[in-house]
Every structure is written in structure tokens, then in C-alpha cells.
Length: 110
Image (cartoon, rainbow, N blue to C red; front, side, top):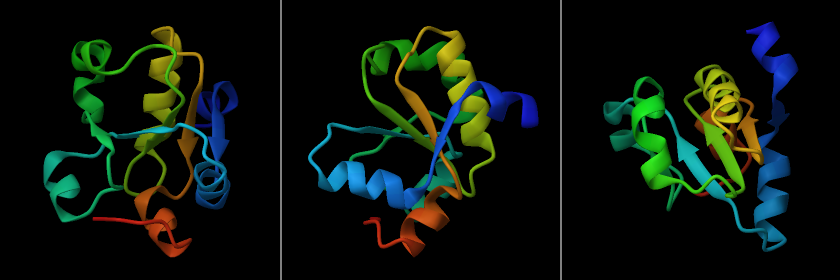
């Protein structure tokens, strides 16, 4: 985990909310399992579970997208962001504390 965190950018839910409120185009990528996404997600988020990223992401997400990766509490998203960077995605960040932190910070969920 520490090695992956050293290679990626990590942002807080508050920072993401500020970027979103400033009008920045952000693509949210939810890497949780389907049953977790069914309970709650960030509106408009793209869902590709962590185990399927290598095979499914390229067809759904352009490499130039501004991507914020999130999971339940910020662990899987670190590894997913690291993988995306290895695959050539250049503007990727992992959201610390995941959807729980997002909700606690006042972010919208559906």
C-alpha cells in the first residue's frame, strides 16, 4: 500500500468537492463490487470493479479524462489509480476515505 501511495496522487473528498464546485470536469470511477455500488454511489460515476479494470476500462474511459477513483474507504482506489497510471492514464487521483468520506464531507450520493 505504501509503495502504491508513493506513486499516485491522493486527494481528500473536500478537495474533490472544491474541484467539482469550481466547474472542473471530473470523471468519478467507482471500483467497488456491484453489490456495494447498488447501495450508494456518486451520481454519474462510472463503475468498473477493481478486478475488471485491466480488461474493461479502456473501452469506457478515455486516457485524457480527469479521473477520481474511489471505493468504500480509500484502499482499493489506491491500487486502481496506480494501475490506471501504469496503463497510460495521466490525470488520475485516488480519493482518500472513499465514498464514506465523500458522504461525510457533504458529497451527493444516490
